[in-house]
Length: 164
Image (cartoon, rainbow, N blue to C red; front, side, top):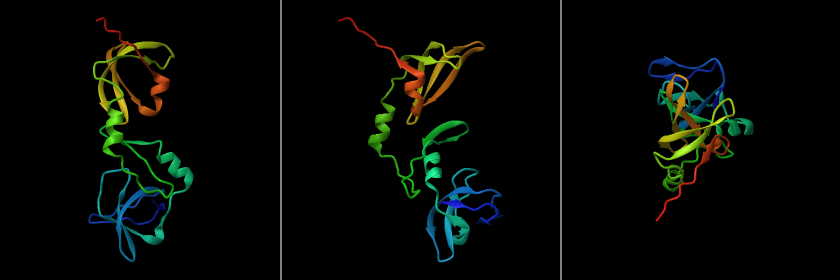
């Protein structure tokens, strides 16, 4: 759902409403309030929103959210997935395991740089919605995070042949 800008968001600490429309996640409701939290921000929980101040997401907003990931301290930990009503669809263990098994830590891949050239990189960390790859940069070793939607654009797998 969306809380309309300028509307109150009632928390133990007082009104934490925002000046612009913002996404909220609801976990319960009363006759007068939805209760939940803002999708982005400091993580205040059990915030009350007047039902009259909230609206459903538009299809464009749902499409935009389905392209977003969320992070803590700059580390991507998940990706939004909403149905056509704006409800969160949880990822199953099977889906997450399939995502984690797309690469192997230590695997050498080709990664596309911002200038369009390709260079070798080493897979250092695999997350459900992206992969960290170590690459040589002008200032030394660095890490690139490639989100799964961009794998085909920015990563080429190298074939490894083993002689028996």
